[in-house]
Amino acid sequence: MSLNSCELSLVIPSSLNDRPIEALLDSILIQNLNSNAFEVIVVINGEGIWNEQRIQKLENQYSNVRFLINSFPGTNRARNVGAKYAQGDFLFFIDDDCRLVDPSQLKRVLSFCQERTVVYATGMYRTPINGKWHQQIYNFISNSWLRAYSDRTGQHFTFLGGALLISRHLLSECGGFDESIQGGGEEWSLAKKLLPRRITFLNSLCVWHSFQGGWWRLLKKKHEHAESSLKLEMAPTFDRRFFALAEELSASPSSNLLKTSIYIILVLVGGLAQLFSTAKMKRNA
Image (tube, rainbow, N blue to C red):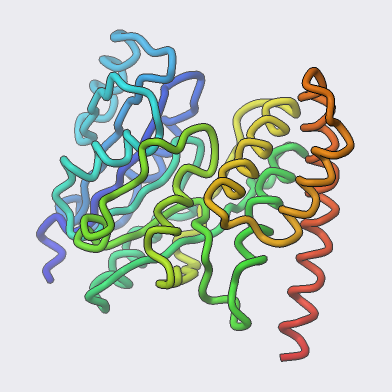
């Protein structure tokens, strides 16, 4: 393959709802990779509050980025729309509250792709140095779920992380993302479709992630993630156990906030326990 053709498509689902998407786009556009080798597609999904003026401003500011409008809600639907219009052989899905870690990241990603016929890889979240406590906790829990289902080498996962890199033909073969899953952990439905194929952990797919929202949104989002993993029957053992305990401790229909609060505390404890036990297992391997 030649670096003079578009091989890599970055697909970014976005609601533009108070999202700092400019930070991500700026981190992409300073990449020291031939601009003809990749394209950037932002798919604005229908679940956010956005207006024509902001879209026009972004189009003027980032003339080499394609903006598509999807009038229906759902992150997975936005991902599928982006994949449909993408031209690259390899699709790099990244959320709008992330950003690339350095100007050479896309060059490393593309080099990885060029050495393989089938690509299916993910990375972890990194928290910026000035990240707030709730942002650090969000990323810690997300990364703990990845580690909980990694193999002994730590190089292959069952869950998807903060970014996904996949061959176009592999995504097409499995029918794309499941658009019926909404709310949190939507991309995990793709991981289930592709089982028993494991996901390669790739350092060059680790991204800076700044979770948007405060503590209450953190609780709500992690609760949604847990429900998605349970629905897909992909939840790690500790997640199932602590989620069931939270349900038991807050059986009243009016105690959703209490249930969520209890859940997040328990899953933090469970995540720490899982993290330490996984590290111990790998040391003894």
